[in-house]
Length: 114
Image 1 (spheres, one colour):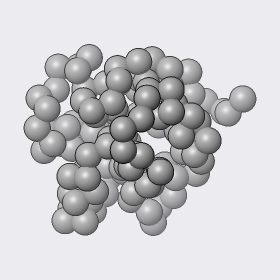
Image 2 (cartoon, one colour; image 1 turned 45 degrees about the vertical axis):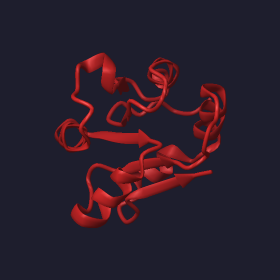
Image 3 (cartoon, rainbow, N blue to C red; image 1 turned 90 degrees about the vertical axis):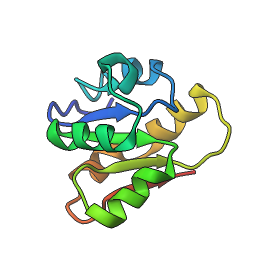
Image 4 (spheres, rainbow, N blue to C red; image 1 turned 30 degrees about the vertical axis):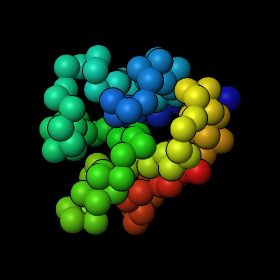
């Protein structure tokens, strides 16, 4: 079992299932899905919300990677680059990734998962 880190929250983008936020709530308390908090689907609103509220964005959208190139971080981005895949496959990808190490890393802004 991974340790719970109270300051680290995941913000799941609209292109991922809302059930992911519930699943990862155990390890990352306070994690949310953009639809559950009424965020506009426009990337700049999601980016600003994540930055203001200490979230790491999880998305299949390359636009967040592009924003990181332009603006740096925070927020950090976990970019799922696995084409069409099930929610279960995304859960497995995220569960196998070293998310805590990435979120605590002071140098890397984007974690790419394939």
